[in-house]
Length: 286
Image (cartoon, rainbow, N blue to C red; front, side, top):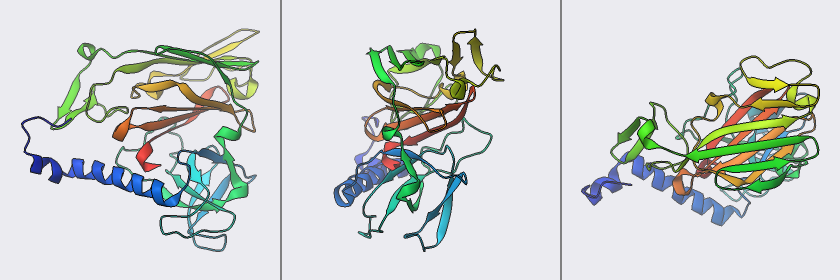
């Protein structure tokens, strides 16, 4: 929140405030005019391992590429200009950084946009999903017959961290940018994310993943997410997650966090005993 002694004209002309205001206005206008359901994340299904993103219909210019296990936001319908392309799906996506599974998009980075054919879209909500077994503010458990995902949070103790403050609030925690608030102090932080079960596609076969905390015996394997994959995430909603299984047995964990201008999405993809991708983006940009 801005300081109470700040001149109102300074607030309205400050570039950070104007940028956030513009984001909210654009999001509201798009939602009102495009008539699509936001935040419908998906991955591609294509034997070549990638799909070309086009400017419009299937004969139009190629403007990008989405690869296997690269999450993107999508919807059917018109673009902002009212143009509709038959059998095409509008997509918002960020370029995947190969070899850097925990790399985050900048909070001011805008997604790339375009169209792909609807036959190449596999929505996460349409995949077989784990069911929510229990949930509190501190802990949620999702499970099916062979897998169990446990997500735990704890109250954020500001006294144990170094908060970097700017003119309009908290900008960094322990020297790093973070997700979950728009200048305020977070309420809760992620303590742990763990996956337990007997799924070979998720855990791999007989090998402990290098650089990851995992234990195994003849019956069950447990994979604990490393700190660098969760340490910058705050105020997650534990009881609204979509946790689902892809066509090759890989596991997708999609959660939402924050609120207002700080609302965001995070998606982890786990396969062969490791996190192969982590996607994070503000809701207003998707």
